[in-house]
Image (tube, rainbow, N blue to C red; front, side, top):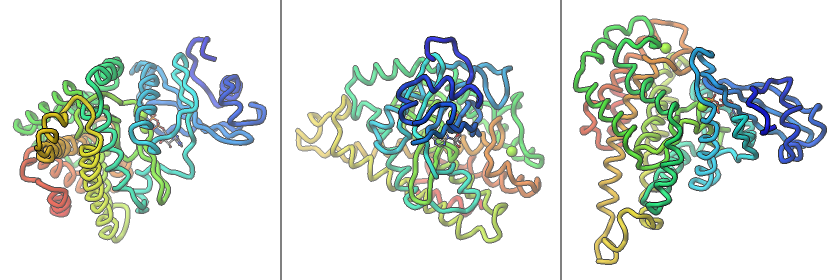
Length: 412
Ligand code: ADP
Ligand code: MG
Ligand code: MG
Ligand code: MG
């Protein structure tokens, strides 16, 4: 199907078109016209189908030439599928077992055929339903540390890293969405913004805070101008799928090279928003809120432990060579600690920014959005917004994950 022009798939046309791809047809088994095709896309951007054959099932994800959430008034390049595909293969190599396997990729059709994760569900749904996932913090911390370390010059040679940065630098429009929706729009009356009635005074206070806006812009400069490692770029709880004890990361189309603290910061924000929204989702929110804070603590501990482990055992790249440290009898551990401190400070600020944009800018999250009682929603979102501001302006006072979770309890 790749020699034809791009054409969006439909439930009706998918079997006939995808059935021509040998690798996929063999895997699914049986005649394509017997395959069951369902559209499942619940994301903001793309078409996603489940295709069930006689032997096996796959996911078919296809980019649309516009933003699905908004419609064809907002065009978006198809090439993002090319970058998502390359991100998935790099994540599979750098953090084995964490992402769905790619079965087939068609650049013209902007289509990725991949492993169907089941019975996994989107983590955000579990967090709203109050369901626990065993090993979540360990998994997330390791995923972030492995991709951060192995996508950087701590692990890569300078030419390899430059080639990879050059490849992903072509993903232009997608980072521009983050630059606007995440870092900029929350702090002025941008056209596509919306927020819950009742939040006006909190929003006005954020926009009047020049120190805060200055810090956010400094973080935007880091995000845009700094290529420390390959980011997932959209690591929220809707990009993680889980059973009660198995976890995978999906949807890396926002991939770019950027600062090491970005993914883990965005993830912590999504845990904190799940935390603040709990009183609306269950009668006795305390025990589940405690579990969410434990997940944050475990994520940070696993990140640090894995990063230190890789620093000690896999520091084979251009940066911090052993010739400058161990070979001359000097420990490189203090240098590792200094880098972890910088990552932590960056992560806290990215966390605060993500907490803001999910209540103020275009794409809100279900944790808050599904709260029907508007006054209650405003009250809970206000806690989240205020803590976000504190993370951005008082970063230096938050020295540890414990200090972060203590602060969440204070704002709750
Ligand atoms: P978008 O880029 O539009 O956000 P996603 O990659 O997040 O698309 O996929 C949208 C939805 O499709 C996910 O929320 C999930 O429910 C489902 N999905 C995507 N990939 C898989 C997969 N490999 N296995 C099972 N379900 C998936
Ligand atoms: Mg998605
Ligand atoms: Mg996506
Ligand atoms: Mg909202």
